Amino acid sequence: MCDERGAAIEPVAVVSNERVADDVGRVVFDAPRTAASIAPGQFVHLRIARGADFILRRPFSVHRAYDGRLEILYQVVGRGTKVLAEAIPGDVMDVIGPLGAGWSVPGDATRALVVAGGLGAAPMGMLVEELAAREVDVTFALGAPSAGRLVARQLFESLCRRTLVATDDGSAGTCGFVTVLTPEALERERPDVVYVCGPEPMQRIVAAQCAEAGVACQVSLERLMACGVGACLSCVVATSDGLKRACVDGPVFDAATIAWEPSGDAEVAG
Image 1 (tube, rainbow, N blue to C red):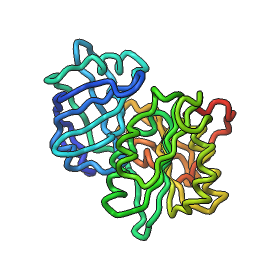
Image 2 (cartoon, rainbow, N blue to C red):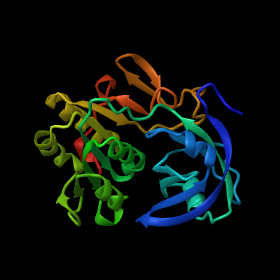
Image 3 (spheres, one colour):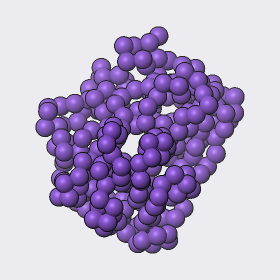
């Protein structure tokens, strides 16, 4: 089954599943069709099936896609991700994908700043690989609650000219939220475009910093998605162009179009 955007259901087999940070795992699926067609920032809707019957699928960003395989980072936060953490090689599940609108790389971009808080690093792997392939000079600002929660740091350090780190408890890099790094990075690096993913209060702050600096900013928003294909309206985002569905109109949006909900900065994590 295939929709007009090329999304389809594909059975996928677990190749490997390992813990890569505190409460964070990385599962690799053999998924040749989806891996060949997915673009940076798009996502898949995964049916978790291992000794459990979950009615609803779970949306997951794709961290990397290569050689017919999909690499997904997940944080154990509920029953579904707990079961996913117990998956072993050979387990068969299925995905619908690729879904949604991903990151856009301007043709004339020569410098980019990528900002990720916590598991906001998940959709950034494919992005930095794409930016590196286009010879875009990338600075990465990576934040997490602690050193044990830093995700994919080695990959980003290998592909980006400069990687900045901040942790809430000061156990690695600068002590504080990742948003303490971005004003200086914007001033020093003068990027053509900024990409952001992480807790929404963090994204709101970085979007405001970019607006003040006059730099284009794209954000990847996380929403509950029951269907993932635009039918259930569970993932609506308020924008200057009206209500949009994160699953089909996003999850990546121009930050300048988002009607941000005010929230306390104390809620910002990573």
